[in-house]
Image (cartoon, rainbow, N blue to C red; front, side, top):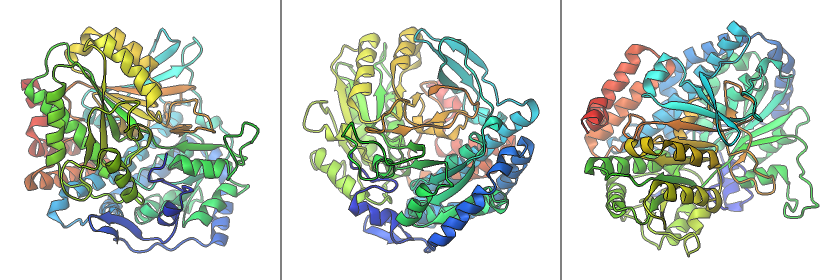
Length: 606
Protein backbone atom coordinates (compact mmCIF):
# COMPACT_ATOMS: atom_id res chain seq x y z
CA UNK A 1 0.00 0.00 0.00
CA UNK A 2 1.33 3.43 -0.90
CA UNK A 3 -0.72 6.10 0.83
CA UNK A 4 0.26 9.38 2.40
CA UNK A 5 2.62 7.76 4.87
CA UNK A 6 1.81 9.28 8.23
CA UNK A 7 5.27 8.80 9.72
CA UNK A 8 8.66 7.80 8.32
CA UNK A 9 7.65 6.04 5.09
CA UNK A 10 10.46 4.79 2.92
CA UNK A 11 8.95 6.64 -0.03
CA UNK A 12 11.39 9.33 -1.07
CA UNK A 13 8.69 11.80 -2.11
CA UNK A 14 7.20 11.64 1.37
CA UNK A 15 10.31 11.52 3.53
CA UNK A 16 11.14 15.14 2.92
CA UNK A 17 7.60 16.34 3.45
CA UNK A 18 7.18 14.43 6.68
CA UNK A 19 10.57 14.77 8.29
CA UNK A 20 12.29 17.51 6.37
CA UNK A 21 11.80 21.25 6.60
CA UNK A 22 9.66 22.21 9.56
CA UNK A 23 6.72 24.55 9.25
CA UNK A 24 5.40 23.52 5.81
CA UNK A 25 2.23 21.99 7.09
CA UNK A 26 -0.74 22.99 4.99
CA UNK A 27 -2.08 22.34 1.52
CA UNK A 28 -4.78 24.39 -0.15
CA UNK A 29 -6.40 24.35 -3.54
CA UNK A 30 -3.30 26.17 -4.79
CA UNK A 31 -0.85 23.71 -3.25
CA UNK A 32 1.25 23.54 -0.10
CA UNK A 33 1.45 26.63 2.07
CA UNK A 34 3.51 27.70 5.06
CA UNK A 35 0.94 28.57 7.68
CA UNK A 36 2.74 28.25 11.01
CA UNK A 37 6.01 29.47 12.42
CA UNK A 38 8.92 27.09 12.01
CA UNK A 39 9.69 24.90 15.02
CA UNK A 40 13.39 24.36 15.59
CA UNK A 41 14.66 20.82 15.40
CA UNK A 42 15.98 19.39 18.64
CA UNK A 43 19.77 18.88 18.19
CA UNK A 44 20.75 15.23 18.39
CA UNK A 45 22.89 15.69 21.54
CA UNK A 46 19.87 17.28 23.19
CA UNK A 47 17.66 14.36 22.10
CA UNK A 48 20.07 12.01 23.85
CA UNK A 49 19.99 14.19 26.96
CA UNK A 50 16.18 14.24 26.97
CA UNK A 51 16.05 10.46 26.70
CA UNK A 52 18.57 10.20 29.54
CA UNK A 53 16.64 12.67 31.70
CA UNK A 54 13.30 10.92 31.23
CA UNK A 55 14.80 7.44 31.66
CA UNK A 56 16.27 8.50 35.00
CA UNK A 57 12.73 9.18 36.20
CA UNK A 58 11.22 5.84 35.13
CA UNK A 59 11.44 4.21 38.55
CA UNK A 60 10.13 7.31 40.29
CA UNK A 61 7.10 7.47 38.01
CA UNK A 62 6.40 3.74 38.32
CA UNK A 63 6.38 4.00 42.13
CA UNK A 64 4.47 7.29 42.31
CA UNK A 65 1.08 6.67 43.98
CA UNK A 66 -1.96 6.89 41.69
CA UNK A 67 -3.25 9.92 43.58
CA UNK A 68 -0.07 11.86 42.91
CA UNK A 69 -0.19 10.94 39.22
CA UNK A 70 -3.83 11.96 39.07
CA UNK A 71 -3.01 15.35 40.59
CA UNK A 72 -0.54 16.02 37.76
CA UNK A 73 -3.15 15.21 35.11
CA UNK A 74 -5.68 17.44 36.87
CA UNK A 75 -3.14 20.26 36.63
CA UNK A 76 -2.81 19.54 32.91
CA UNK A 77 -6.60 19.73 32.48
CA UNK A 78 -6.59 23.15 34.12
CA UNK A 79 -3.87 24.25 31.71
CA UNK A 80 -5.95 23.04 28.75
CA UNK A 81 -8.50 25.67 29.70
CA UNK A 82 -5.92 28.47 29.60
CA UNK A 83 -4.30 27.18 26.39
CA UNK A 84 -7.50 26.23 24.56
CA UNK A 85 -7.59 29.12 22.10
CA UNK A 86 -3.89 28.81 21.34
CA UNK A 87 -4.32 25.09 20.66
CA UNK A 88 -7.18 25.78 18.25
CA UNK A 89 -5.18 28.50 16.48
CA UNK A 90 -2.20 26.17 15.99
CA UNK A 91 -4.46 23.30 14.93
CA UNK A 92 -5.92 25.49 12.19
CA UNK A 93 -2.49 26.78 11.19
CA UNK A 94 -1.09 23.25 10.91
CA UNK A 95 -3.88 22.40 8.49
CA UNK A 96 -3.55 25.60 6.48
CA UNK A 97 -6.97 26.90 7.58
CA UNK A 98 -7.72 30.59 8.00
CA UNK A 99 -9.51 30.93 11.32
CA UNK A 100 -10.98 34.29 10.21
CA UNK A 101 -12.36 33.15 6.86
CA UNK A 102 -16.12 32.57 6.98
CA UNK A 103 -16.05 30.09 4.08
CA UNK A 104 -13.71 27.90 6.13
CA UNK A 105 -15.98 27.82 9.18
CA UNK A 106 -16.62 24.09 8.81
CA UNK A 107 -12.89 23.42 8.59
CA UNK A 108 -12.13 25.52 11.66
CA UNK A 109 -14.89 23.63 13.48
CA UNK A 110 -13.27 20.31 12.53
CA UNK A 111 -9.85 21.45 13.72
CA UNK A 112 -11.31 22.77 16.97
CA UNK A 113 -12.95 19.44 17.80
CA UNK A 114 -10.02 17.32 16.54
CA UNK A 115 -7.69 19.19 18.90
CA UNK A 116 -9.38 20.25 22.13
CA UNK A 117 -11.92 17.44 22.39
CA UNK A 118 -9.42 14.61 22.04
CA UNK A 119 -6.90 16.26 24.35
CA UNK A 120 -9.53 16.77 27.05
CA UNK A 121 -11.03 13.31 26.60
CA UNK A 122 -7.74 11.50 27.13
CA UNK A 123 -6.71 13.64 30.10
CA UNK A 124 -10.06 12.94 31.77
CA UNK A 125 -9.75 9.25 30.94
CA UNK A 126 -6.35 9.13 32.62
CA UNK A 127 -7.75 10.91 35.66
CA UNK A 128 -10.60 8.38 35.95
CA UNK A 129 -8.23 5.40 35.71
CA UNK A 130 -5.84 6.82 38.31
CA UNK A 131 -8.70 7.84 40.58
CA UNK A 132 -10.06 4.27 40.56
CA UNK A 133 -6.59 2.92 41.36
CA UNK A 134 -6.27 5.47 44.15
CA UNK A 135 -9.62 4.65 45.75
CA UNK A 136 -9.96 0.91 45.17
CA UNK A 137 -6.55 -0.39 44.14
CA UNK A 138 -8.16 -1.64 40.91
CA UNK A 139 -8.91 -0.14 37.50
CA UNK A 140 -12.53 0.78 36.72
CA UNK A 141 -14.68 -2.32 36.34
CA UNK A 142 -17.05 -3.00 33.49
CA UNK A 143 -20.75 -2.86 34.21
CA UNK A 144 -21.64 -6.30 32.93
CA UNK A 145 -19.90 -9.25 31.26
CA UNK A 146 -21.82 -11.64 28.99
CA UNK A 147 -20.33 -14.80 27.43
CA UNK A 148 -20.65 -15.37 23.70
CA UNK A 149 -20.88 -18.69 21.79
CA UNK A 150 -17.48 -18.11 20.12
CA UNK A 151 -15.72 -18.16 23.52
CA UNK A 152 -15.41 -14.39 23.91
CA UNK A 153 -17.08 -12.14 26.46
CA UNK A 154 -18.80 -8.82 25.84
CA UNK A 155 -17.97 -6.41 28.66
CA UNK A 156 -20.06 -3.26 28.84
CA UNK A 157 -18.18 -0.13 29.88
CA UNK A 158 -19.24 3.48 30.35
CA UNK A 159 -18.68 6.60 28.31
CA UNK A 160 -16.80 8.22 31.20
CA UNK A 161 -18.21 10.64 33.75
CA UNK A 162 -21.79 11.98 33.93
CA UNK A 163 -21.09 14.62 31.27
CA UNK A 164 -19.69 12.07 28.84
CA UNK A 165 -22.65 9.78 29.50
CA UNK A 166 -25.04 12.59 28.62
CA UNK A 167 -23.09 13.53 25.49
CA UNK A 168 -22.97 9.90 24.34
CA UNK A 169 -26.75 9.99 23.75
CA UNK A 170 -27.32 6.53 25.16
CA UNK A 171 -24.59 4.74 23.21
CA UNK A 172 -23.62 1.27 24.41
CA UNK A 173 -19.87 0.63 24.68
CA UNK A 174 -18.62 -2.96 24.73
CA UNK A 175 -15.22 -4.62 24.94
CA UNK A 176 -14.77 -8.04 23.35
CA UNK A 177 -12.47 -10.10 25.56
CA UNK A 178 -11.11 -13.56 24.74
CA UNK A 179 -10.45 -15.12 28.14
CA UNK A 180 -10.41 -18.85 27.45
CA UNK A 181 -13.85 -19.59 28.85
CA UNK A 182 -13.33 -17.98 32.24
CA UNK A 183 -14.66 -14.55 33.19
CA UNK A 184 -12.61 -11.58 31.96
CA UNK A 185 -9.63 -10.61 34.11
CA UNK A 186 -8.28 -7.13 34.80
CA UNK A 187 -4.69 -6.19 35.55
CA UNK A 188 -3.29 -3.39 37.68
CA UNK A 189 -1.07 -0.95 35.75
CA UNK A 190 0.79 -0.15 38.96
CA UNK A 191 2.22 -3.67 38.87
CA UNK A 192 4.07 -2.91 35.62
CA UNK A 193 7.82 -2.39 36.03
CA UNK A 194 9.55 0.93 35.22
CA UNK A 195 10.01 1.51 31.50
CA UNK A 196 10.59 4.16 28.83
CA UNK A 197 8.27 4.49 25.83
CA UNK A 198 9.46 6.32 22.74
CA UNK A 199 6.58 7.76 20.73
CA UNK A 200 6.55 8.77 17.08
CA UNK A 201 3.51 11.01 17.07
CA UNK A 202 0.64 11.34 14.61
CA UNK A 203 0.63 13.95 11.87
CA UNK A 204 -3.12 14.23 11.36
CA UNK A 205 -4.48 15.05 14.81
CA UNK A 206 -3.54 16.45 18.19
CA UNK A 207 -4.81 13.42 20.12
CA UNK A 208 -3.07 12.50 23.40
CA UNK A 209 -3.72 8.75 23.32
CA UNK A 210 -0.08 7.93 22.56
CA UNK A 211 1.09 9.90 25.62
CA UNK A 212 -1.60 9.29 28.24
CA UNK A 213 -1.84 5.57 27.48
CA UNK A 214 1.80 4.67 28.21
CA UNK A 215 1.89 7.01 31.21
CA UNK A 216 -1.26 5.60 32.83
CA UNK A 217 -1.80 2.07 31.51
CA UNK A 218 1.81 0.99 30.93
CA UNK A 219 3.18 2.85 33.98
CA UNK A 220 5.88 4.22 31.69
CA UNK A 221 7.63 7.54 31.21
CA UNK A 222 7.49 8.95 27.67
CA UNK A 223 9.76 10.66 25.15
CA UNK A 224 7.54 12.04 22.40
CA UNK A 225 8.87 12.96 18.96
CA UNK A 226 6.40 15.29 17.30
CA UNK A 227 5.45 14.77 13.68
CA UNK A 228 6.49 17.92 11.76
CA UNK A 229 2.97 18.39 10.37
CA UNK A 230 1.72 18.90 13.92
CA UNK A 231 4.80 20.66 15.30
CA UNK A 232 2.89 23.85 16.12
CA UNK A 233 0.05 22.14 18.01
CA UNK A 234 2.59 19.98 19.80
CA UNK A 235 4.28 23.06 21.19
CA UNK A 236 0.94 23.92 22.79
CA UNK A 237 0.45 20.34 23.98
CA UNK A 238 3.85 20.57 25.65
CA UNK A 239 2.69 23.69 27.48
CA UNK A 240 -0.50 21.94 28.57
CA UNK A 241 1.50 18.96 29.82
CA UNK A 242 4.13 21.10 31.56
CA UNK A 243 3.43 19.57 35.01
CA UNK A 244 4.59 16.21 33.66
CA UNK A 245 7.50 17.67 31.70
CA UNK A 246 8.76 19.72 34.64
CA UNK A 247 8.92 16.59 36.80
CA UNK A 248 10.88 14.74 34.13
CA UNK A 249 8.21 12.14 33.31
CA UNK A 250 7.66 13.37 29.75
CA UNK A 251 9.67 15.14 27.09
CA UNK A 252 8.90 16.50 23.63
CA UNK A 253 11.53 16.50 20.90
CA UNK A 254 11.18 17.90 17.39
CA UNK A 255 12.77 17.06 14.09
CA UNK A 256 12.91 14.49 11.35
CA UNK A 257 14.50 11.20 10.44
CA UNK A 258 17.60 11.57 12.62
CA UNK A 259 15.65 12.49 15.73
CA UNK A 260 13.29 9.57 15.11
CA UNK A 261 16.20 7.21 14.63
CA UNK A 262 17.86 8.42 17.82
CA UNK A 263 14.69 7.53 19.69
CA UNK A 264 14.15 4.12 18.12
CA UNK A 265 17.78 3.06 18.47
CA UNK A 266 18.39 4.29 22.01
CA UNK A 267 19.24 1.49 24.45
CA UNK A 268 17.37 3.41 27.15
CA UNK A 269 14.04 3.21 25.28
CA UNK A 270 12.19 -0.03 26.04
CA UNK A 271 9.46 0.14 23.41
CA UNK A 272 8.33 2.25 20.46
CA UNK A 273 4.77 3.41 19.94
CA UNK A 274 3.98 4.93 16.57
CA UNK A 275 1.04 6.25 14.59
CA UNK A 276 1.73 6.16 10.87
CA UNK A 277 1.92 3.87 7.87
CA UNK A 278 3.13 0.34 7.37
CA UNK A 279 6.15 1.80 5.57
CA UNK A 280 7.18 3.46 8.81
CA UNK A 281 6.74 0.21 10.67
CA UNK A 282 8.75 -1.74 8.12
CA UNK A 283 11.56 0.83 8.18
CA UNK A 284 11.84 0.53 11.97
CA UNK A 285 11.21 -3.19 12.40
CA UNK A 286 12.95 -4.58 9.31
CA UNK A 287 15.52 -1.86 8.65
CA UNK A 288 15.77 -2.67 4.94
CA UNK A 289 15.88 -6.44 5.39
CA UNK A 290 13.79 -8.65 3.11
CA UNK A 291 10.70 -9.40 5.18
CA UNK A 292 9.41 -11.76 2.45
CA UNK A 293 12.32 -14.11 3.18
CA UNK A 294 11.12 -16.49 5.93
CA UNK A 295 14.73 -16.95 7.05
CA UNK A 296 15.22 -13.23 7.62
CA UNK A 297 14.63 -11.87 11.12
CA UNK A 298 13.53 -8.34 12.10
CA UNK A 299 16.22 -5.78 12.77
CA UNK A 300 14.33 -4.25 15.71
CA UNK A 301 15.34 -5.57 19.11
CA UNK A 302 12.51 -3.96 21.10
CA UNK A 303 8.71 -4.11 20.87
CA UNK A 304 7.13 -1.79 18.32
CA UNK A 305 3.47 -0.99 18.94
CA UNK A 306 1.81 0.57 15.90
CA UNK A 307 -1.54 2.14 15.04
CA UNK A 308 -1.49 2.11 11.25
CA UNK A 309 -4.02 2.64 8.49
CA UNK A 310 -6.92 0.74 6.97
CA UNK A 311 -9.39 0.66 4.12
CA UNK A 312 -12.43 0.95 6.34
CA UNK A 313 -15.83 -0.39 5.26
CA UNK A 314 -19.13 1.40 5.84
CA UNK A 315 -21.90 -1.20 5.61
CA UNK A 316 -25.50 -0.21 4.89
CA UNK A 317 -27.84 -3.05 5.83
CA UNK A 318 -31.10 -3.34 3.81
CA UNK A 319 -34.13 -2.69 5.97
CA UNK A 320 -36.86 -5.26 6.43
CA UNK A 321 -39.21 -2.37 5.71
CA UNK A 322 -38.45 0.66 3.53
CA UNK A 323 -36.56 3.62 4.92
CA UNK A 324 -38.37 6.94 4.79
CA UNK A 325 -37.10 9.73 2.56
CA UNK A 326 -35.88 11.57 5.67
CA UNK A 327 -34.00 8.50 6.86
CA UNK A 328 -32.28 8.06 3.50
CA UNK A 329 -31.25 11.72 3.42
CA UNK A 330 -30.06 11.66 7.02
CA UNK A 331 -27.96 8.53 6.54
CA UNK A 332 -26.44 9.85 3.30
CA UNK A 333 -25.48 13.07 5.08
CA UNK A 334 -23.99 11.18 8.02
CA UNK A 335 -21.80 9.09 5.69
CA UNK A 336 -20.54 12.06 3.66
CA UNK A 337 -19.87 14.20 6.74
CA UNK A 338 -17.91 11.33 8.30
CA UNK A 339 -15.97 10.80 5.09
CA UNK A 340 -14.95 14.47 4.88
CA UNK A 341 -14.01 14.82 8.56
CA UNK A 342 -10.52 16.36 8.85
CA UNK A 343 -10.28 16.37 5.02
CA UNK A 344 -10.42 12.54 5.17
CA UNK A 345 -7.08 12.51 7.00
CA UNK A 346 -8.47 10.03 9.53
CA UNK A 347 -7.19 6.47 9.82
CA UNK A 348 -10.76 5.18 10.26
CA UNK A 349 -12.29 7.30 7.48
CA UNK A 350 -14.88 5.25 5.56
CA UNK A 351 -13.50 4.31 2.16
CA UNK A 352 -15.68 1.46 0.91
CA UNK A 353 -19.45 1.82 1.04
CA UNK A 354 -20.90 -1.70 1.12
CA UNK A 355 -24.48 -2.07 -0.10
CA UNK A 356 -26.79 -4.88 -1.26
CA UNK A 357 -27.20 -5.03 -5.04
CA UNK A 358 -30.80 -6.18 -4.72
CA UNK A 359 -31.88 -3.75 -2.00
CA UNK A 360 -34.86 -1.95 -3.58
CA UNK A 361 -33.68 1.38 -2.18
CA UNK A 362 -30.03 1.10 -3.21
CA UNK A 363 -30.32 3.45 -6.19
CA UNK A 364 -32.26 5.99 -4.13
CA UNK A 365 -29.63 5.89 -1.39
CA UNK A 366 -26.73 6.26 -3.85
CA UNK A 367 -28.41 9.24 -5.47
CA UNK A 368 -28.71 10.84 -2.03
CA UNK A 369 -25.01 10.15 -1.33
CA UNK A 370 -24.01 11.75 -4.64
CA UNK A 371 -26.15 14.80 -3.94
CA UNK A 372 -24.53 15.23 -0.55
CA UNK A 373 -21.03 14.76 -1.96
CA UNK A 374 -21.79 17.38 -4.61
CA UNK A 375 -23.22 19.92 -2.17
CA UNK A 376 -20.79 19.34 0.71
CA UNK A 377 -18.56 22.27 1.66
CA UNK A 378 -15.10 22.17 0.13
CA UNK A 379 -12.37 20.05 1.67
CA UNK A 380 -8.82 21.38 1.97
CA UNK A 381 -6.35 18.52 2.22
CA UNK A 382 -3.23 19.35 4.23
CA UNK A 383 -1.39 16.08 4.76
CA UNK A 384 1.92 15.60 2.90
CA UNK A 385 1.43 13.26 -0.05
CA UNK A 386 -2.29 14.00 -0.35
CA UNK A 387 -1.86 15.39 -3.88
CA UNK A 388 -0.29 12.19 -5.12
CA UNK A 389 -2.79 9.93 -3.36
CA UNK A 390 -5.71 11.98 -4.66
CA UNK A 391 -4.40 11.76 -8.23
CA UNK A 392 -3.98 7.99 -8.00
CA UNK A 393 -7.48 7.47 -6.62
CA UNK A 394 -8.96 9.87 -9.15
CA UNK A 395 -7.44 7.74 -11.89
CA UNK A 396 -8.71 4.53 -10.23
CA UNK A 397 -12.20 6.03 -10.10
CA UNK A 398 -12.24 6.78 -13.80
CA UNK A 399 -10.76 10.29 -13.74
CA UNK A 400 -13.86 12.14 -12.56
CA UNK A 401 -14.76 13.70 -9.22
CA UNK A 402 -18.27 14.71 -8.20
CA UNK A 403 -17.60 18.36 -9.11
CA UNK A 404 -14.94 20.44 -10.80
CA UNK A 405 -12.75 21.83 -8.02
CA UNK A 406 -9.59 20.97 -6.15
CA UNK A 407 -10.05 18.17 -3.60
CA UNK A 408 -13.61 17.50 -4.80
CA UNK A 409 -14.82 14.16 -3.43
CA UNK A 410 -14.16 11.11 -5.58
CA UNK A 411 -16.93 8.52 -5.80
CA UNK A 412 -17.05 5.35 -7.86
CA UNK A 413 -20.08 3.10 -7.77
CA UNK A 414 -20.34 -0.66 -8.23
CA UNK A 415 -16.69 -1.62 -7.85
CA UNK A 416 -16.00 -5.32 -8.20
CA UNK A 417 -13.68 -7.07 -5.76
CA UNK A 418 -11.99 -8.63 -8.79
CA UNK A 419 -12.35 -5.78 -11.28
CA UNK A 420 -10.20 -2.91 -12.48
CA UNK A 421 -10.75 -0.67 -9.46
CA UNK A 422 -9.58 -3.00 -6.71
CA UNK A 423 -6.88 -0.41 -6.02
CA UNK A 424 -9.53 1.42 -3.99
CA UNK A 425 -10.07 -1.67 -1.86
CA UNK A 426 -6.38 -2.20 -1.17
CA UNK A 427 -4.86 1.27 -0.83
CA UNK A 428 -5.75 3.61 2.03
CA UNK A 429 -6.56 6.88 0.29
CA UNK A 430 -6.22 9.29 3.23
CA UNK A 431 -8.05 11.78 0.99
CA UNK A 432 -11.70 12.27 -0.12
CA UNK A 433 -12.10 9.03 -2.10
CA UNK A 434 -15.11 6.74 -1.64
CA UNK A 435 -15.92 3.50 -3.45
CA UNK A 436 -19.15 1.51 -3.46
CA UNK A 437 -19.24 -2.29 -3.58
CA UNK A 438 -22.63 -3.94 -4.10
CA UNK A 439 -22.80 -7.40 -2.55
CA UNK A 440 -24.65 -9.78 -4.87
CA UNK A 441 -26.99 -11.24 -2.28
CA UNK A 442 -30.67 -11.19 -1.58
CA UNK A 443 -31.78 -8.26 0.61
CA UNK A 444 -32.55 -10.68 3.45
CA UNK A 445 -30.64 -9.82 6.60
CA UNK A 446 -28.94 -13.16 7.15
CA UNK A 447 -27.84 -13.67 3.54
CA UNK A 448 -26.49 -10.14 3.18
CA UNK A 449 -24.68 -9.95 6.52
CA UNK A 450 -23.02 -13.36 6.16
CA UNK A 451 -21.57 -12.33 2.79
CA UNK A 452 -20.64 -8.87 4.06
CA UNK A 453 -18.70 -10.35 6.95
CA UNK A 454 -16.62 -12.50 4.60
CA UNK A 455 -16.10 -9.62 2.16
CA UNK A 456 -14.94 -7.14 4.80
CA UNK A 457 -12.66 -9.65 6.50
CA UNK A 458 -11.08 -11.04 3.34
CA UNK A 459 -11.16 -8.44 0.56
CA UNK A 460 -10.30 -5.11 2.20
CA UNK A 461 -6.80 -4.08 3.27
CA UNK A 462 -6.44 -3.59 7.01
CA UNK A 463 -8.57 -4.33 10.05
CA UNK A 464 -8.71 -1.13 12.08
CA UNK A 465 -12.40 -0.19 11.93
CA UNK A 466 -15.79 -0.90 10.41
CA UNK A 467 -19.08 1.01 10.61
CA UNK A 468 -22.45 -0.73 10.15
CA UNK A 469 -25.71 1.17 9.63
CA UNK A 470 -28.92 -0.75 10.38
CA UNK A 471 -32.37 0.56 11.23
CA UNK A 472 -33.79 -0.17 14.67
CA UNK A 473 -36.67 -2.35 13.47
CA UNK A 474 -34.42 -4.61 11.42
CA UNK A 475 -31.81 -4.86 14.17
CA UNK A 476 -34.40 -5.78 16.80
CA UNK A 477 -35.77 -8.57 14.61
CA UNK A 478 -32.36 -10.06 13.75
CA UNK A 479 -30.32 -9.23 16.85
CA UNK A 480 -29.07 -12.80 17.45
CA UNK A 481 -27.84 -13.20 13.86
CA UNK A 482 -26.33 -9.71 13.96
CA UNK A 483 -24.36 -10.48 17.11
CA UNK A 484 -23.04 -13.64 15.48
CA UNK A 485 -21.76 -11.56 12.54
CA UNK A 486 -20.15 -9.06 14.92
CA UNK A 487 -18.40 -11.93 16.66
CA UNK A 488 -16.88 -12.97 13.33
CA UNK A 489 -15.81 -9.49 12.14
CA UNK A 490 -12.06 -9.02 12.46
CA UNK A 491 -11.79 -5.28 13.15
CA UNK A 492 -10.35 -3.45 16.12
CA UNK A 493 -13.43 -1.22 16.39
CA UNK A 494 -16.94 -1.74 15.06
CA UNK A 495 -19.44 1.10 15.20
CA UNK A 496 -23.12 0.21 14.85
CA UNK A 497 -24.96 3.37 13.76
CA UNK A 498 -21.92 5.12 15.20
CA UNK A 499 -18.86 6.51 13.35
CA UNK A 500 -16.13 4.08 14.36
CA UNK A 501 -13.50 6.84 14.58
CA UNK A 502 -15.42 8.45 17.45
CA UNK A 503 -14.60 5.43 19.63
CA UNK A 504 -11.11 6.90 19.96
CA UNK A 505 -12.61 9.66 22.13
CA UNK A 506 -13.36 7.09 24.86
CA UNK A 507 -10.18 5.84 26.57
CA UNK A 508 -12.10 2.92 28.10
CA UNK A 509 -12.18 1.42 24.59
CA UNK A 510 -9.15 -0.10 22.87
CA UNK A 511 -7.91 1.52 19.67
CA UNK A 512 -5.78 -0.36 17.18
CA UNK A 513 -5.88 -3.10 14.57
CA UNK A 514 -7.45 -6.48 15.24
CA UNK A 515 -4.96 -8.68 17.10
CA UNK A 516 -2.86 -11.13 15.12
CA UNK A 517 -1.28 -9.04 12.36
CA UNK A 518 2.08 -10.48 11.41
CA UNK A 519 5.18 -8.28 11.29
CA UNK A 520 5.75 -9.43 7.68
CA UNK A 521 2.29 -8.13 6.69
CA UNK A 522 1.48 -5.67 9.46
CA UNK A 523 -1.56 -4.02 7.82
CA UNK A 524 -3.33 -1.98 10.58
CA UNK A 525 -0.64 -2.59 13.14
CA UNK A 526 -0.09 -4.32 16.43
CA UNK A 527 -0.97 -3.46 20.00
CA UNK A 528 -3.62 -1.08 21.29
CA UNK A 529 -3.96 2.16 23.16
CA UNK A 530 -6.89 2.73 25.48
CA UNK A 531 -8.60 -0.13 27.31
CA UNK A 532 -8.46 1.95 30.49
CA UNK A 533 -10.49 -0.70 32.33
CA UNK A 534 -7.34 -2.79 31.81
CA UNK A 535 -8.87 -6.09 30.70
CA UNK A 536 -6.54 -8.87 29.57
CA UNK A 537 -6.81 -10.13 25.95
CA UNK A 538 -9.15 -7.49 24.57
CA UNK A 539 -9.80 -8.18 20.88
CA UNK A 540 -11.98 -5.29 19.80
CA UNK A 541 -14.63 -2.82 20.82
CA UNK A 542 -18.22 -2.49 19.62
CA UNK A 543 -20.29 0.68 20.00
CA UNK A 544 -24.07 0.51 19.56
CA UNK A 545 -26.32 3.46 18.78
CA UNK A 546 -29.85 4.02 17.57
CA UNK A 547 -30.45 4.42 13.84
CA UNK A 548 -31.07 8.15 14.35
CA UNK A 549 -28.85 9.61 17.05
CA UNK A 550 -26.98 12.73 18.07
CA UNK A 551 -23.57 11.15 17.40
CA UNK A 552 -24.06 11.20 13.62
CA UNK A 553 -21.91 13.71 11.79
CA UNK A 554 -23.60 16.54 9.89
CA UNK A 555 -22.60 18.82 7.02
CA UNK A 556 -22.38 22.60 7.26
CA UNK A 557 -23.48 23.45 3.73
CA UNK A 558 -24.63 27.06 4.04
CA UNK A 559 -22.78 30.13 5.38
CA UNK A 560 -25.16 30.15 8.34
CA UNK A 561 -24.48 26.48 9.10
CA UNK A 562 -20.72 27.04 8.86
CA UNK A 563 -20.93 29.89 11.36
CA UNK A 564 -23.06 27.78 13.66
CA UNK A 565 -20.65 24.84 13.27
CA UNK A 566 -17.87 27.08 14.61
CA UNK A 567 -20.06 28.14 17.52
CA UNK A 568 -20.90 24.51 18.31
CA UNK A 569 -17.22 23.54 18.13
CA UNK A 570 -16.37 26.43 20.47
CA UNK A 571 -18.92 25.09 22.97
CA UNK A 572 -17.46 21.58 22.64
CA UNK A 573 -13.94 22.96 23.19
CA UNK A 574 -15.01 24.65 26.42
CA UNK A 575 -16.73 21.45 27.54
CA UNK A 576 -13.56 19.46 26.78
CA UNK A 577 -11.69 21.51 29.39
CA UNK A 578 -14.14 20.58 32.12
CA UNK A 579 -17.45 18.76 32.01
CA UNK A 580 -20.45 20.41 33.65
CA UNK A 581 -24.20 20.29 33.15
CA UNK A 582 -24.15 23.89 31.94
CA UNK A 583 -21.45 23.25 29.34
CA UNK A 584 -23.19 20.11 28.08
CA UNK A 585 -26.43 22.12 27.83
CA UNK A 586 -24.65 24.80 25.81
CA UNK A 587 -23.39 22.17 23.37
CA UNK A 588 -26.96 20.88 23.05
CA UNK A 589 -28.25 24.40 22.40
CA UNK A 590 -25.57 24.95 19.75
CA UNK A 591 -26.50 21.63 18.15
CA UNK A 592 -30.15 22.65 18.02
CA UNK A 593 -29.31 25.93 16.30
CA UNK A 594 -27.01 24.31 13.75
CA UNK A 595 -29.10 21.28 12.82
CA UNK A 596 -32.63 21.25 14.25
CA UNK A 597 -33.18 17.96 12.40
CA UNK A 598 -30.46 16.38 14.57
CA UNK A 599 -32.17 17.09 17.89
CA UNK A 600 -33.89 14.45 20.00
CA UNK A 601 -37.35 15.92 19.44
CA UNK A 602 -36.95 15.90 15.66
CA UNK A 603 -35.77 12.30 15.73
CA UNK A 604 -38.78 11.18 17.71
CA UNK A 605 -41.06 12.99 15.27
CA UNK A 606 -39.33 11.30 12.35
